[in-house]
Image (cartoon, rainbow, N blue to C red; front, side, top):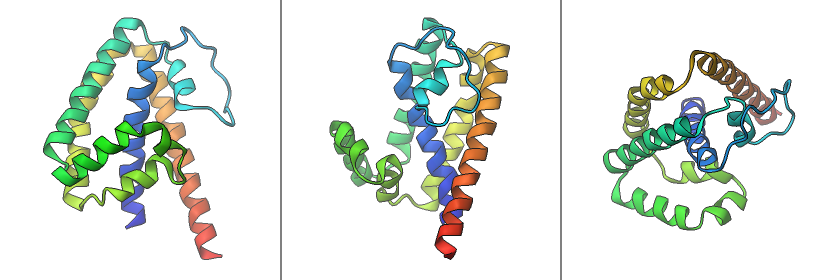
Length: 163
């Protein structure tokens, strides 16, 4: 169950990480750093050097995606939990477990997880179309890094659980 849940959670974290930094003014043409040790998602997204128009398009697409997930996937109880978390966002992020812990607390069914993944996949081409070819290539490299980091965390978690 953990193995199936991790990719979904990573996707949800990525989704929220994409939308949140785009609301904040991104640094234009931030210099690329080789394997930063501790960076925020915002720092990673700054590497794409999105224009203001691109940021606005990305925000709009992500908002549409979140709204569709909210309305078509989540139960009224889950919606209420999410609304409460949004109101207390700062407190929730500072609690142990962070976003991963919160998403786990929603107790999504396998059908809900599959529907969320399906919705995200339908929006992916629209998000990709906003980026220039160079940004698309950079995004692909970033996704590969995130996947490697996720796999490393999973392996570390598995080795800690086996001890």
